[in-house]
Length: 284
Image (cartoon, rainbow, N blue to C red; front, side, top):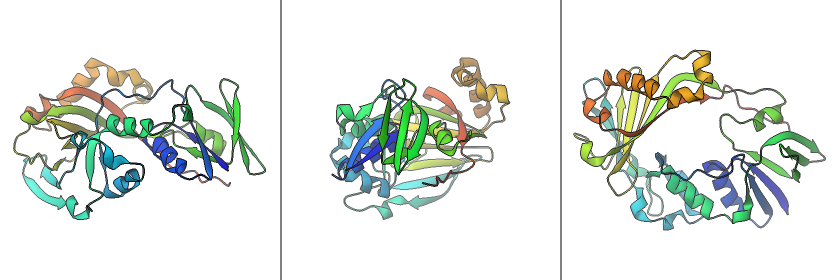
């Protein structure tokens, strides 16, 4: 039996752990640097038909249908004049077993977490050293504990420190000169759009998307705004939780988007967007 270690208990790490557990040739352990998985009510996620096919392998079809939604189309609108440009029929890619799906991220994360044995996820584990010998990988953690494995899967996000350890150089993500604005909006506050579809509003320096995240009345809003920030602002992550900063972003948006939508957004949060400049290809 081969031992597989997965770093990072986000959506990808949890899904890979679930899939590999179905193969008796592998023993799987998942390490997470935080002391728990955040299951607070959060924003939406869109899952393609291929994603659903993978999730159905571990029983996703049994998730309460009220907590999921299957949009029919993506409707494209001009942000400037609010007129519809065209639409894309995403239901054409559906099958009886797998349909394009939207839902809350926490619904998906909770499903993935609950499918795993409690002792499979080890918390408060951050790697500070990776070595390999004779096809065996040795891992040392900050608490001075250690383990070894046959395969190592790194899925701890764009700020992964494990990638730097593997590559033996500092790999840092690059600020994409854009901010994401996430929020929730009630169905009653949405006018002139088809609530059964995903609505995408396209502008020059800003675009946004609105879509249902369950069979209730909640919709997810996310906007991407071009925004130049200096190095100090990028490093100051508390800035993006600052009420004054968020208010200044909303003021920028007031000149770009429908005021009836902007004024009804709830639980607004801002996030700087980062990307990796390169993908590291390990020798082993």
